[in-house]
Amino acid sequence: MKKRIPPPLITMFCILIIFLSKSIFPSFVFPYKLELGVVVSIFGLLLLIVSVKSFINNNTTINPLNLKKSTYLVTDGLFRFSRNPMYLGMLLFLLGTSIVLNIIGGLIISILFIFYMNFFQIMPEEKALENLFGKDYRNYLKSVRRWI
Image 1 (tube, rainbow, N blue to C red):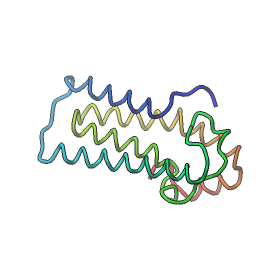
Image 2 (cartoon, one colour; image 1 turned 45 degrees about the vertical axis):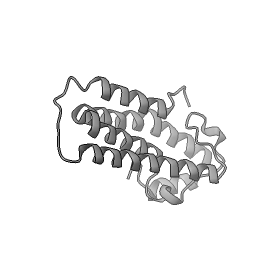
Image 3 (cartoon, one colour; image 1 turned 120 degrees about the vertical axis):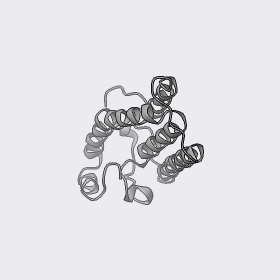
Image 4 (cartoon, rainbow, N blue to C red; image 1 turned 90 degrees about the horizontal axis):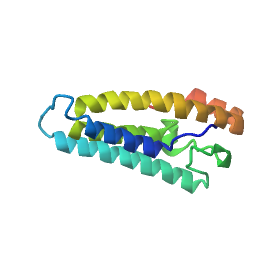
């Protein structure tokens, strides 16, 4: 794969943009805004942690920038429901942050995050994993959705 930006850095950059753009968009106040944002963010972090733990338990790399080091195709746990629960966790963390800081700007950034991840991260990963795991990965593609 070509040189890529690590997904956690992309997520942090998105959070920075959400924070910096909050003065551009109107603010919305609603009951339990903080609580809802925190719950969504925590749920996203939990998805991310559980997904990383699945990779560690199967002795395979979590580094999407060097897929040649992948030794095992993880298809159990959260990976039965989503091919990319780590990215889904990052997205939920962005959405939770958006609810708290800047809901309109955050939704725009989150949509851009989805497009970026699909085209510049996930699609190249899928090609690399298909080359690495062949038929097993193609079957996995048919049975599990990309995000949810």
